[in-house]
Amino acid sequence: MAASNSSRKAQGLTGDELLALPAVIDLDTSNRALMIGRSTGYGLAKQGEYPVKVLRLGNAYRVVTADLLKLLGLERRQSSGGLGEAHGEHDLAA
Image (cartoon, rainbow, N blue to C red; front, side, top):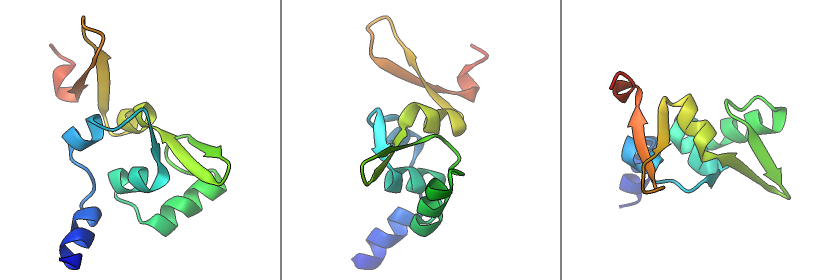
């Protein structure tokens, strides 16, 4: 079972999983979404070279999910009900 869990982590996140993320996520989740390793992600964050803005809150790193989604070509848009509705590049022509 342990091999199954580690292989799932290496796969990254699906579009639906990305769009279901809260407004701010930890660096490990962002690393998984970008399919980069933990050491690489933390190294980039410490050097100020992470692909999106990283917030340093005490000893913790946080990433704004909207910035990550934009980098990955996904966005949440507002519906008339006020809840976020997701779309990707394929929806932009509509």
